[in-house]
Image 1 (cartoon, rainbow, N blue to C red):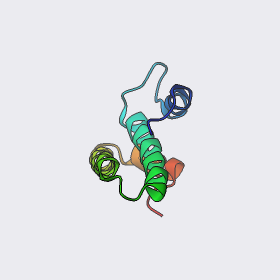
Image 2: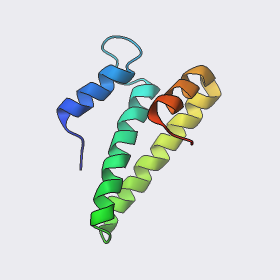
Image 3: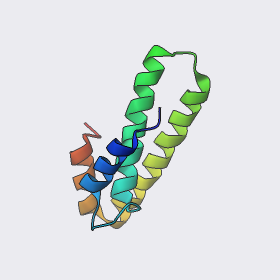
Amino acid sequence: MAIEATRKAEVIKEYAVKDGDNGSPEVQVALLTEDIRSLTEHLKVHRKDFTSRRGLLKKVGRRTKLLRYMRENTPDRYASVIARLGLRR
């Protein structure tokens, strides 16, 4: 259920603010979104996997906190990330 190393590298490269960046909020939100989508697909097949469901909810909570931080401190970067990831329809 974890994303592959190649896909993770692609996401980091796409959302990095500067070269060698893997800890900025944009990258963290993008990686969490990728994990959330993967877990959602897994749970569609395995409905009774409550351990994975708990992990999914923890990741959603962490992403929500990061997005709140971005919205309060850097609204322009927040709007950019939301649009690029397709969140908040």
